Image (cartoon, rainbow, N blue to C red):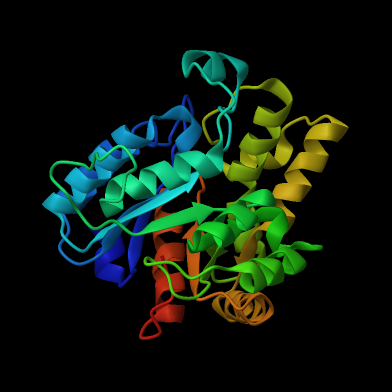
Length: 297
């Protein structure tokens, strides 16, 4: 698999439903396939949306994955709602206690379940929390590592990270706080080319937020000339501003600043654009920046 050949440390799969071009509706199924065609790279979810699932089922799925790929499976967990109302209805989404579900899931995986259940086959599966706001507090209380992105990396998000570190309670799984940062990263020969690569995904996000439907990605030329409402333009600009894009030197400098500011141990990099060859080149350029250093997922 290309990510493994390039030297990436992890391959993450996010849970999405009804999104064209994203094979994320069944993370455990995708990860089983990825694990079967790789031999070194870690495979994990970033993440499974726990409110959509029963904790025991998630524990069984990932313990089974771990039995097929021992020592290579990671379980990242979030609580984002289904993106659209039809998806939320189809998922039978109800209010759930995320902290309680995390604790129950950890009990199943650790063999400490209060009701005496644990998955068969059993497996050691590291857990991560995709955290924003109160999610950081929950992770600190449970002694779990976190993956953060979006608003946490801007504004007053650093105070939330500091609080996570201060309030972290060591656990059998994690002795000390651990943070990874997650964001879109695209690398090209010039800053202008990299900025263009951001447009298809940013435009699709802007349309989805105003129509409730995530469309397939379109070529850069289409995204550049599309008619947009002021609100869509605002969403597009927000998506572009949240990403890191540029030449290898520009991306390296920006990521170094983010690592320094957040104290993160690892980067969880996502990138998406219409031109698959340009995306492959971006992935290779990003891997080259981290070659030999390790903190790249």
